[in-house]
Image 1 (cartoon, rainbow, N blue to C red):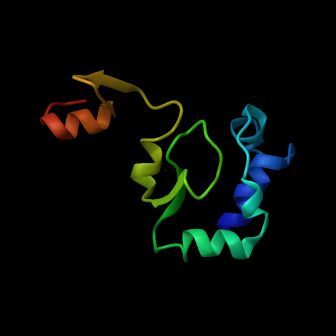
Image 2 (image 1 turned 135 degrees about the vertical axis):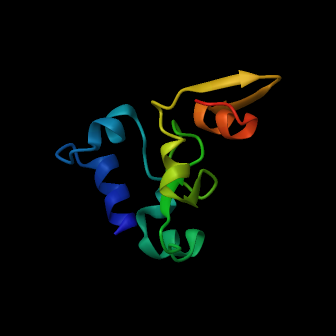
Length: 103
């Protein structure tokens, strides 16, 4: 299901999420046209995890994808506000957790 949904949102203009993925240039790497290659690279989806692109503007590819919790995935959205301090960039939520401060 993850593999199919990934392809649909990147290549099917009729998919409700296409504008946020394929419509802004997000693609699936050529290797992952094959489900078997995707499975070999990513392994089985761990329970409760979702696919996440490390670079939110990058492609779905072995070097740019990981399994993440919904919370981790939400912190990596293009709409997530990020702040940089002392050369370290994190989401507002991550900074709040790291410092013990309220968001």
